[in-house]
Image 1 (tube, one colour):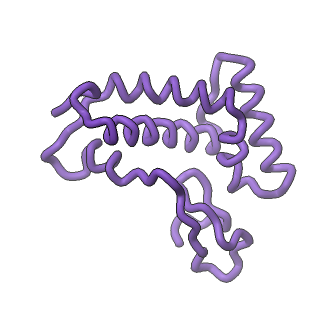
Image 2 (cartoon, rainbow, N blue to C red; image 1 turned 90 degrees about the vertical axis):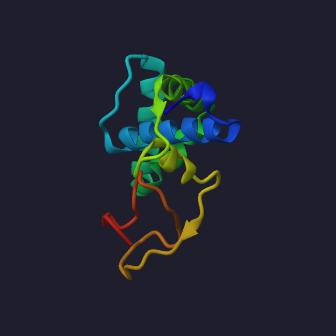
Amino acid sequence: MKTYKELSEEQRTKARLYFRSMMLRAICEGTAFFEDEKLQTRIDRAVAKAESLQTPWFAHEYVLEDKYIVQRLDAMATLEAEESIYLEDEPAVDLDVIEAVDDEPKLYKCAYNDCPGLPYKASNLAHPCGKKTC
């Protein structure tokens, strides 16, 4: 096992990105709410923008456009990463998960012909056609 301090700088960065993506997922799924009214209002505004443009699968993109939200999420992700313990030699553990985090999302093409969002930035946060897998 490793603590956050024992991770390499690259692993630390990926750990923070991992925890931020988990928060983004919860925000876009509507399962994360924040007591900070300013933060919650800005998140609600970004999600509403995506819905008003009939592109709810891009809600996370609109959330990440707001620098205040990004700063707050990054601070929370850093705290989560610092408090976590990272396993090394077991299957499907944190270090394996954070190593799989991409720095830049890639564009993908949905396999379903009726998908309205081709191409799209793949993430676990949202999928353009609402299907679980492509």
